[in-house]
Length: 179
Image (cartoon, rainbow, N blue to C red; front, side, top):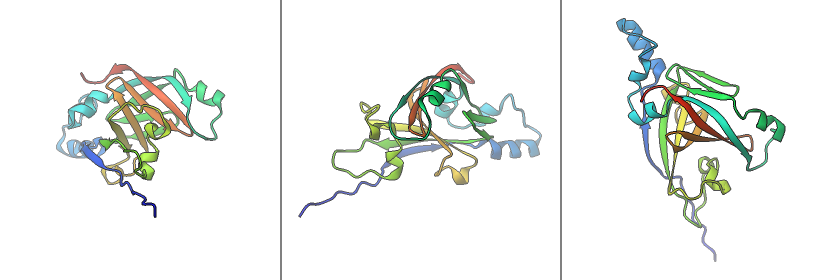
């Protein structure tokens, strides 16, 4: 009789940051709202370091989807914005987004992946050299952060990956909002 080991995605850690929409309302009431300093109200230094403007530098087909190769390649050189006041990626705009970093343990041979784990690039054979996978999850508000609208894989502070309709897009930093 064979035994099937069920893997429950182990979330090693996460950093829930101050969502700018909640902080902005509080600062506005207190008379201290300033869009030029909103970055200071994101309370996780690692997330602040990831915010900025990125360029799509490459894309690879990694599984089935309805996006054609021509449509995917048209996105190369487009810009994405990650800031306290706006997350803009392709046709997705999230005003005053909430950011969270989630760290996933490496999936061991024989363990059955969860649906969240299947969305990670290493499940599809890309970036398999990593021992942990970190994602920058982006949602409209704190209540929705466990089901983010967008989840970007953090390769390093200047490189992010995003799987989108069968294509893996690489984002490379153009500039940083805060150092």
